Image 1 (cartoon, rainbow, N blue to C red):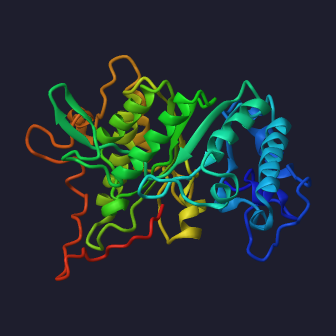
Image 2: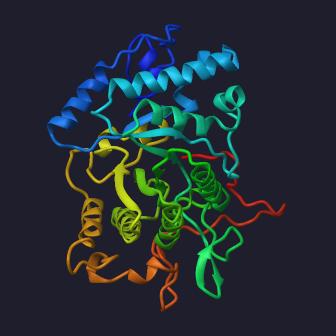
Image 3: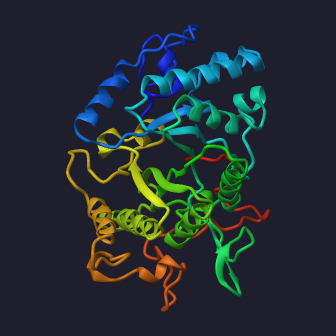
Length: 373
């Protein structure tokens, strides 16, 4: 997942970032050998490709901090043109900018913001379009997948003041507003990626959005004329309570995969899902966070129940398919538009965790201002 990012491409050895491997200062020195092998394999097997990612502050060369604003602009433009021109005709879809938003929906003051100004996102998309006018260009971010609802005379609509807020409503709104601003400026942007790194046992900003929230977010972005994809989906289960047995963990993971994807597929602007890994044996979560099993194949590359959940979601596209067909034949179609069914049952009721209780100081136990994946 790191091989096509800027930092690894200009290290002495390409590949996953290593703290013990300092970057070179040779801005024009690229080694695409590892990426070439993956791209050629995908093309040979008729697989769809997406380039990830051209501009992301986390995996950019640290020497950008020592450069002047003019030098940074030149380096970013050169990187975009070098990378896209090398793969022109082979990679036709690109995440141009990744994770530029803070939890409150404002722009993170990263190295690109500080050196190039707040319009750096717009400029990167224009350079990307200039480098390859035929490429499909995407903005990608995390914790932006859901939009809460508020009752209006015309039915539900998205609102940060709604009675059913998304886990980070401010960031979801910031994501939408950023995309809206780019579209209104005539910036060549074609799609939006919502990462979907979910935790079944999460609370507060780690709480999974409901299918209805995801559907509303996709709908309003689609109304801007953009396509929407779920770009990095995985579903962690290790933070469910110790009392949760393997069956409950599997059911929670399966429901999240199945119902979120079913809701997304019900929107015309939704154009695809990308899972962040293939099997639990090689998930990034184990290296970056803790032991978990977030994917649809296990450590031995065997299909899990969550695989069946994804399969069931895809079947809703077939003639006679039903959106939200759960295990056991129970339909969850009602959850596409609201978070509670006609019997008062909330989506995820069997496994969704209650929010932490407030302590004596009015603070919620376990509260943290640090935003995680």
